[in-house]
Image (cartoon, rainbow, N blue to C red; front, top):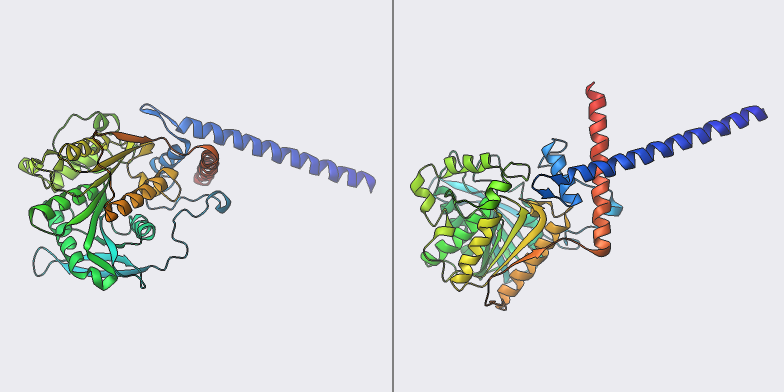
Length: 400
C-alpha cells in the first residue's frame, strides 16, 4: 500500500514537472513568435500591431472577427458603460425618385440640441470592402464619446455605381441630417463630417461641396487616414507600404480607381482628389489621423498642409506603429482608442469654437502607450499571440 502511494506521488510529481516544462516551452515559443512577427522589411512593429496583422494576413481570423483576450487583461475601453443609446435604421431618397439608400442613426432618447456627426464608412469605394456593419463599432463609439447624434449612410459603391454616385449620396445625407436632426435630438446648426479611408475622402469632399453649394455650415471635419488623390503621385508611403500586409494594397487601390473613377479626367476633379483642389479656403477646422505603416499616410498629411496654407485650422497626428484601419481595432489597440479619444476632444473644442490655429504646420507623432499601460499592452499582445500559436497548432493537427 505504501509503495502504491509513493508510486502515485511520484507519478503526480512527474506529471506536474512535465506540465510546467510544456507551459514554459509554450511561453518561450509565444514570445519568440511575437518577436518574429514584429520584424518586417518595412520596420519593426509594436507587439499588438504585429499579432493583429499576423492573425489577419495568415487567415487565423478574418477582418470581421472580434479578436479578444481574457477579460482581466482588457478592461472596457469603449466608454459606453451607462450610456443609453438607440439605433434607428431608415432610408433616404438620393440620386433620383426611385433611388434610396440605407441610413443608420445613433441618438439618445433624453438628449436635445446635441451636435451631429455625419460619418462615412471606409471600404475603397468597392462593394464587399466596407459597410455600416463593419464600421458599427467606430460609429457607436464616436456617438458614446461625444454625446452627438451620429448619422451614417450606406452610400452607393463601385463597380455598379461609379463617381459621382457616392459623392451625391454623401452630400444628400448631410442635407437630410440638417432637415431631420431635431427629430433625433440633434442641433441642425451644429454638424460635422467624419470618415475613414474612402470615407475620409468623402468627408473632405462633402465639406467642400457644402461650401460650394451653400449647404450646411459645418463646425469640423474628422478624417481618419483619408485617400486624398486618385492621381499617380509618387508618395513614399504608397510605395513602401503597398504590399497589402498593412491592410491596404496597391492592387486594391488600383481596383478602386478603375471601378470608381474609370475615366482619367475624373482623377483631377476636386470632388475625387481634394488634394489637388484649387480652392480649399473657407472649410471647417480639420483633425487628420494618419498611421505610420499606411500607403495613404503621406497624402493625408499633405492635405493637412494644404488646408493650413489656406488658413484652415488643422491638427494632424501620425500614429507610429499603426497600420491602415487601426482605429477600427480600438477595442484591443490602445493607439486606436487614443485616436478616438483625441478625435472626441477635438470635436468638443471645435463645437465650442476653441480650436487653436498654429502659425506653422506640424505633424505630431504618437508613439504609443507608456509605463503601466505599456506593460498591459504587452501582456495583451502576448495573450493574443498565445491564442494564435495554439490555434495554429490545433489547426495543423486537425487537418492532418
